[in-house]
Image: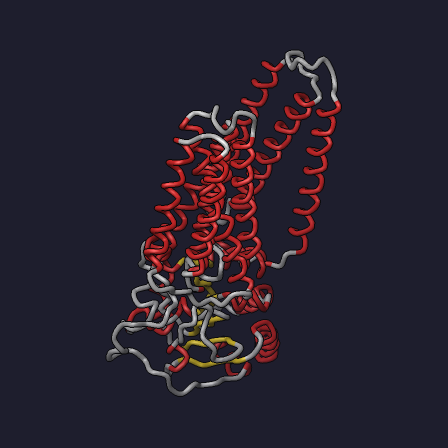
Length: 489
């Protein structure tokens, strides 16, 4: 086996893996093909890891004819041992976490995985700088690659850790609005640029110091950027961090001269940026407004104008009454939210929709682009419960149907059905497109209490005359409702 053959094998395998990743993204674009897309992505990653491991083992053991070693060496053997241990340990840990994580914990798991990518990019940059000749032998272009890779990686790492703590509830969802926060961000970026110039122009022992100093500034920047973003924007933040992790991986690919890492990172980075843009459009906001706007802070605009619904009387209902409404309806729309995910009520909800369908009652599901705390969170939950894709409708498709709807069941959602987005300029979510459920004949909201949603914004929908409140744990309420439906049918 020659080094030339190994290089050809690796190149062809990387090309095949890249094609599999592209096909995977295409498959993930629709619910019907998402499972196949995931399988293609897994196959591509497995191929990439396998061929990389083979090349490293052969090279480190000196088994390639052109390697110059003539046979296995102690150093090469130790390197292979570490590689095998890392693969086995990492694979076992990943399998353990994946088998135990609940669907409600998926957003914070994704955020934490993004932090690993950022940390890897930082470590690769530092290791590249510490290589023999790394303080001066690299060209300016490669030094810039190292610097950018560490900067993006550090921002991704610290930002993802903060996102994890917010999603986990360890840190409040309210944005941290420091005085002069924009000037602080600009200062951190400006200081990093100065350090980049010093890093490139003055190679030597000081180069690592400049790099580490920038890393510290980037870590602070990542923390501050995500701390300044409110809970209502966390789905977009997760998508943005996904994009950041892709660019960090691409930067690591440039540092390691690894074509597959570059291609894969670019695919993840660009797709994450596109998804973030789509989600921002769904909220009638820009990326810049999400990152720097501090959504979720106390409103500073004018007080509510005429047309906004003030806090008022709550009309509480019972399971029996809701069952009667559903059985008398012709069209029922179910709006799932994060509360349904927390209660793990998706399977019971699916049983209700199936029961109503058997009774010739039309049932549809309405999905808002930023429902839950992860892009596509509600779609995944409904797919897990085997809800038919044909009755799961996106916001633009379902909104015209609400005026013709007899009953809307809102299960654990708050901000995405808030009428203040349309009629209250003083609301933080004013201008955000929402599911216009209040246009239905009757709205039933399933909530634990009257507390505001994750974004901390009160919802006047609860006080409208056509809204009924069914309080309690969502799963228990849905199970009781299914029992009542069967008893009354």
